[in-house]
Length: 71
Image 1: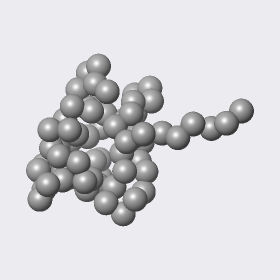
Image 2 (image 1 turned 60 degrees about the vertical axis):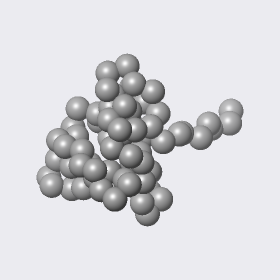
Image 3 (image 1 turned 135 degrees about the horizontal axis):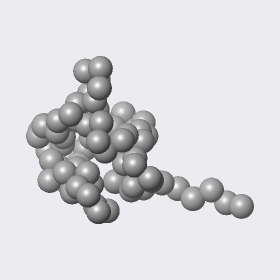
Image 4 (image 1 turned 45 degrees about the vertical axis):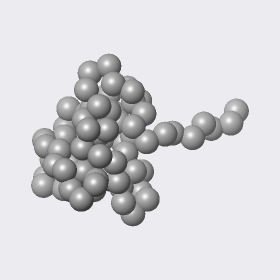
């Protein structure tokens, strides 16, 4: 059985798939994101423990991924 490729912004259960600016994939619980900040055409996401992920998607796009019933 072929493994399908996950897409950025896709929801898998309670997780949202994100790709950071270094190309690493993250599956982050949508409810664990403490804040989203606009950052030079991208967005910064604040995670538990003070960890931050920078993505090359706009603030509005990331916010849309995280809303209930989002993409």
